[in-house]
Image 1 (tube, rainbow, N blue to C red):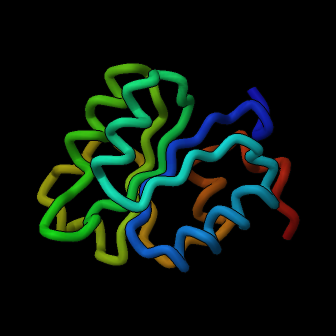
Image 2: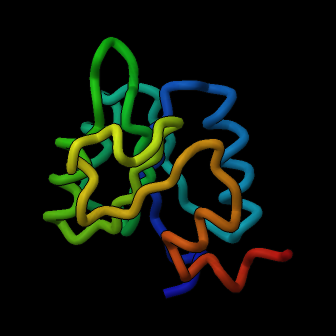
Amino acid sequence: MTSSQVKLLYLEDEVIIALDTEDMLRSMGVAEISVAHRLETAEKLAQRGEFTHALLDINVGRGCTSFELGRKLAEQGVHVIFASGYDRSNFSGQVEGFDYIEKPLDPSSLKRCCPILEDQVSA
């Protein structure tokens, strides 16, 4: 699989962050990105079952988290990456077994969690 074959579900409740990250992912060669700003929207998109990867902000407003969605996607064979501005240790084992990126996101942290992006990233 190459980065152009990635079908990414991206959940981020902060619109500006989502726009910047989407641009970064596209510059890394990811062509198919479905962006959701609300957990409910991401859950509806996930029901399609067409994603190869998911990048999920953990805290998505109103006390909601994306942990359950991430577990469901992983059961479907989706490569799930959780993201948060908080240190991984704040999530009491909720992210064990998953890739995790501490925000702000950057190309090097994304390629560390998703090696197929490696060839697309320029230093």
